[in-house]
Amino acid sequence: MEEVTKKRVRRTAEQRLADLEKKHAEMMERQRAAIARIEEQKKRLMQTPSVRKDKLEEEKRFARAAYALAPEWDHRHFIAALELALAEDAETLQNRGEKLLEEHGKPRRGRRPRKG
Image (tube, rainbow, N blue to C red; front, side, top):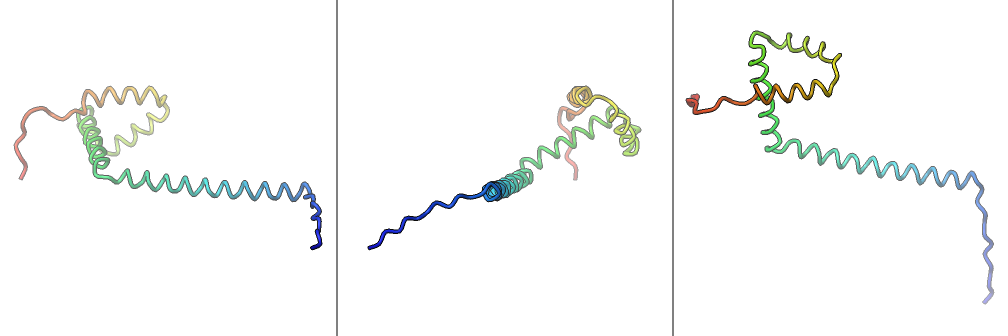
C-alpha cells in the first residue's frame, strides 16, 4: 500500500473573506426566521380572547374618559387635539393621560338595569 501525503492548500484572504461573508449571511437568515417566528407567536397571543377583552375594556375606559372630559366633542375634535398634543413631551402626556384615565375612565358603580 502506497502512502500519499496530502498537501495542505492555503486559502487566500479573498476565499476566507468570502467564507466569512457566507457564514454571516446564513446567520442573518436564521435570525430573520427566528424573529418571524417570534412575531407570529406575538400575533397569535394578541388575538387570544383575554387580550381582546382587555383591549376592549381599555377602549371603553377611553370612551368614558373622553366623554367625561369633553361631552360636546366628536372625532374631528379629538383628531385636532392629537395633532396639537404631538408638539408636547410624550412622557408628560402619558403621565397626565394615566391620571385622567384613573379619574374619569372608571365605570359607574352600582347596579344598572339590563338592556334588552
